[in-house]
Length: 386
Length: 133
Image 1 (cartoon, chains in turn purple, yellow):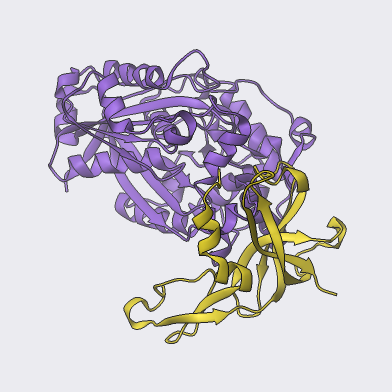
Image 2 (tube, helix red, strand yellow):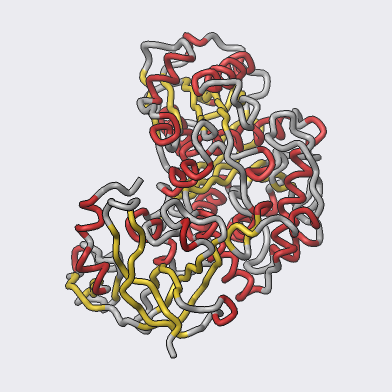
């Protein structure tokens, strides 16, 4: 297997992008990534695009063809991948495999979602497709409800508190306030989060990531070639993916995502690193409890100890580990298909020292963690400067 | 969005009567039914098995922002119920004041309407749970 590096990244501004169409978002991110890579588009040999539910959100399928067309890259091969909210990182993995195998030397990977053109109710219904439609969504479950069921168990088993969960949102808004691409660039107080409306107890509005529009793109190249054509390629030193039951009720535990644990173990083995070697991590905080479980399942904190660690500020920018410097899904926004690629864009910026006001100090290794649905798919990637 | 009659009709025996599967090889029980035992795969043999109709609340949530089709009963309580055979299922808790609901509360399965597709649409039935006396 050949080593693969990222040579260019780009993302659209995330948010309620009523000013831009689906294809404009793709083009916004794609043009930025191509410019960043300084290569000519004609060097790209294939495209992999992640998108969850454009059929439900826009009535538009065949996203592979749409992306390659909008990027002006016809007639090269282009394929869409779907793994709910992990669609972006699953597309990224396909890009890695295509280059690592030697089939291609250079590919583009994109993630995109446009969620605000339907009502909030219809968006929630579309997102429900990430869960077990026949047995859990049928019964009236919503995504906040599924994560609320996990949160309740985590509180019971480990004493995690609603304040500790809310503090994840406060910290992510603090980081998001320093990210010009974030949907929410406002800071919030613990009081605001705690006093927000209950969505599915114990989760409140500020425990939930928003409905967003956005796109992100990364250009991948075989590493030895990347070193010749790119000033600062970022090498992908681990790429892992794992699966679990689609239905939440069927999991052995509700206080961890086994798919995250399995993917993390594989990723750290591939990278020959330990969790303490990571300085910055973009983790999947679709809900605040998801961030708490993620930093435990990835090995940054012992199981059950993350609530207290977050309370002590150990996941803030330039603390023990800088978690979600982008603002995470909570503040940067969560256009589901784009999120997995956006996390990689942030990891690349942090490793290049391009994090602006939210730049973490001394970043040698960055990790990204992306989850599909309530944990039926999880991916972990680790990066360093090539 | 659930305007799919076959989806509601197809699962009737399982959904109305809580018929799951048990693997004759490893003895683990499953609900809903599976065709392949995830423990034994080829060596396993799954046969239909009636699930217990009682269990304990393993986790619960009061849903204040309800799913489409559940507007009339919002807020409602959803729980993951653990049955004595170790199988867990997700369903509504009905006919109970929220303060009576805790992790560990005993519940039993009851046959109820789940949702209706408008005034003239299909009505989906299935199981919900009620606090046991």
